[in-house]
Length: 185
Image (cartoon, rainbow, N blue to C red):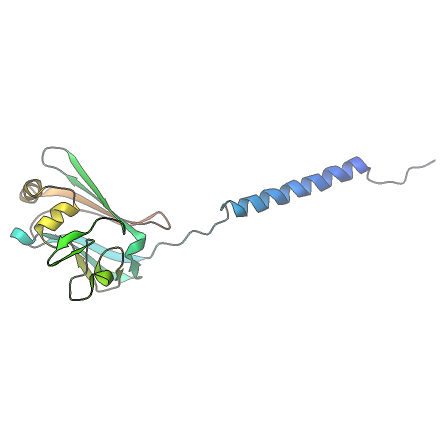
């Protein structure tokens, strides 16, 4: 008697089990976010530089071109290399505390002007090409950098090195990193 069966029931069961395991792994990968598409960071040129003198030394964030930047999606990290060799670090997001800026309290850097604070403060504003945002005045800039007034003035006088990084939170991409001398300008 001849057996015409090409595949035994055991081999058929093994093939079926393998297919089920592979499908389960694919479904788990998609459900777990392994196939998640990351949001691309905006391509924008944002220049950061100190400006002003005396009681009006500020940091300027100037959007020079490219995509609009939703500040709610940005984290600003700063590092000041102190004259004594130390390092002062500071970070700002849409959830940071508000600072005194003129007659109001806003998240810095803010777009100057008469617009309501909810459209010009960091975390709510959308920076577009040509827009400028500033850190207010000398006291607000010192607080923004995590420095006291006396330390900030010493850093300006001795032209301390300042690093500023703009991080796009949804993509985890550094949009801009600038190194400059903290000085009157």
